[in-house]
Image 1 (cartoon, rainbow, N blue to C red):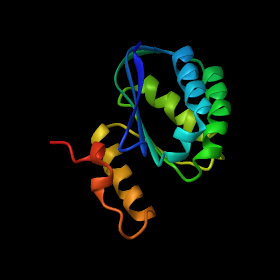
Image 2 (cartoon, rainbow, N blue to C red):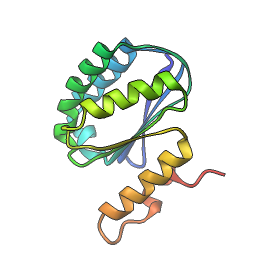
Image 3 (cartoon, rainbow, N blue to C red):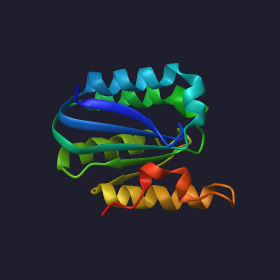
Image 4 (spheres, helix red, strand yellow):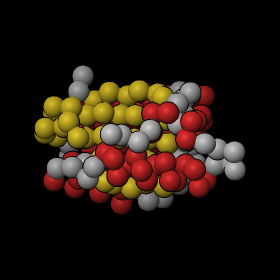
Length: 147
């Protein structure tokens, strides 16, 4: 399946990766699965959604609207979470911006980036500014600076 989800950083982070052709059904199935595990969702502090390896998308604006509605349940468990979307090519970027606009009222702090390194830098900054004063980047090893 070209759209995968990994939970990292002791469950505080979620990385989603699209590769090859990504479909609306895959996005919706992933969102549904995520919304069904309340305990896991409540631990999340951030999500990194990366379409760097996506070559094509069979996703409609209607799929994006449904995705936002499915995200509402997860958002109720994760208020204030940070979502960074990496979308270097035009179609994923346009769809990510549509999601960002429609998801404005979810209570998440989201942003769309052209590069993974920019997305990770933004997540690091956001997480350290929000967490308690004893927060360190060691709590988020998956967000280490890339070479």
